[in-house]
Image (cartoon, rainbow, N blue to C red):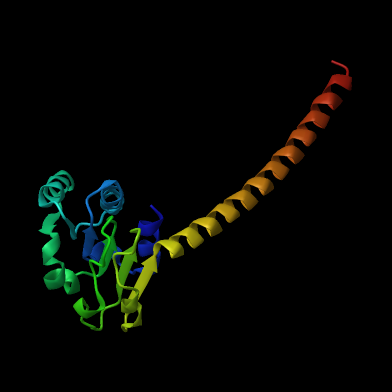
Length: 173
């Protein structure tokens, strides 16, 4: 997922970082899967329905938390990713305690679940779904450009090969 890739790009030694995933739906599970595939171990997942978080935690060998614990535990994590359909903020400005650690908050929820005001807090990077869309568009553009270049090279090689083949048919055996 692009959200996980952006975290890896922004974070040194991400394997040593603690990660909280808020939401155990399809997107939350995909994100959890991507973090674990990349070797991240210090992961917790929380959900409105604790049983769903618990099932995923058991499946991926991570910690399950109750969503009501967010205010108490949010400052323990280096990376927080929200992927829910909640209609209100689950992470608010007042919950965040500034400290010297660089922390990343990723909000891929619609509507937003992380208060945008936290981006004003020192050492906090907030990535929202709009930022991810911009990143995806840039990557897509680069891929299209690379594809056009590859097609050009293939056509040149194909033409050279066709000329070589036709020249071989003219040579005596």
